[in-house]
Image 1: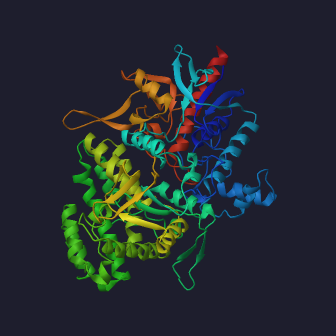
Image 2: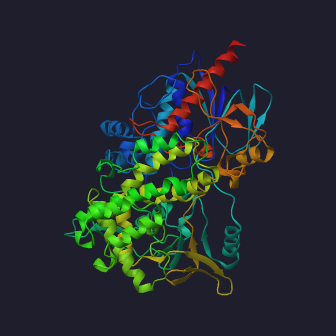
Image 3: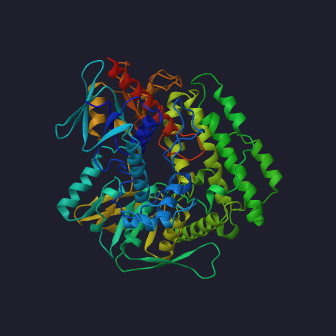
Length: 637
């Protein structure tokens, strides 16, 4: 019998243990942590993954210890952030794992560490918590398949091998969950087996067999999001290739030095272009200041009647207008010859534009669309459709990709001046405020799910959650070298069974590629209704959990991608973040943390940053107070 069982061994589990220790329980608390991959690091930060897989947040933005910026009921107990921990290793001059010392030497507040190094950091913070003497941990590698209700005071976590772990409380901290394979994925997997093709299905990059991707051959890549950059790294630098600076290029352009072991990558997606990079020193770049969509504007919207606002109609035009203002203001300094009117005239016209279509009309009229071969053309629509849905020739697309390379180099190296960087920065500042607006309950249910949680979140990831600038420079160098070729927007993939080939084709550029290998560098992003996680499936299918739904204006229930959990009170002794059953009752002995309950715990998917409020750490403290309270009650009974 344990005092608590935590399912999932990544940062949410580590943070929960740390918060238990911070509360100084009157007796040692026995906890079991279950993870199929790595207790302490979890799947995302597993320590056996390639060094090429990097975080997309800086070392200085990473901690697992709470400070007074996060509202909690438990006490603050200081601990090292990732930078301090790495510095201590360097000062010591040794580590039981040699590569840890080598990578720690490269850690700076603005650097992007490998994910495996961050995994070691998490593991060592967990070990330090156990060494405090306040907790006793059982680290169990296995797969949880069910949580059995054995009465009002006991839950049992059942593992795939039949092991049963009993406790008065269970914390579900799985993190990112994968989806059930689609019919198309199953068809491609079957064809790969029968026809001798290579197919890398969607999933965690660290869990894939990259060795089977052929060298020197054409390979189709479908997906240009965050995982795409991992794929490019492991198939180039990870195969002996190298990069060197281009002499005289002040923007940091790189040249690729091939090893001969690389494939030729043909990559496409719906947008057709990769996620935008974080700029050099992006954390220190000048902060974005909204012209009208400022905090007061968001607060006024949050005070509206519940479920009364439509995100697309009432919120998005003002955010889009800020993007337009940011772009034009930066363009007036970066390439003033590209403006057809004065900046004050353009801004005045934007003030009168009430719809996104009208905003695009102003942008089209204010910018010389042909200046520098169209390099400065910009509309809100082009963020999602680079050619605005118009078909272009392969040659025109190649010129547009060349412009993209130049724009990214400028955006990364001049984050305070480049128009592209200005739009990225605006999204980075506004998407968090939009998320808080969604939480306030003022968005109509269907709009909240389809618009905010759908395309707007995707746009936010594209513009403001991209890779480190160094990784993007490597991708651009591969484009220059001809080893990475972008097929274009609206790229679809089919299977030619007779030829024994995958076929990729862009509906916009007409570019078609045939290859015997297909890579899909994407994940399900934690979508619970379609998950293949056996534990969540057991809970949902049996009615012991339900998918969170929002109420649409017509009365219909619109399902989100998350499980439903209760809110969290700041009152000491209160439960919180507890699982909601299908019938609406609450299981106060099961706590859900983070991604599986993202729609009711916004921001909890993001790691903790020193001196910034952290939903991840706040949730861990809510779980810890329930663990400590129930353990105390158990011993008194």
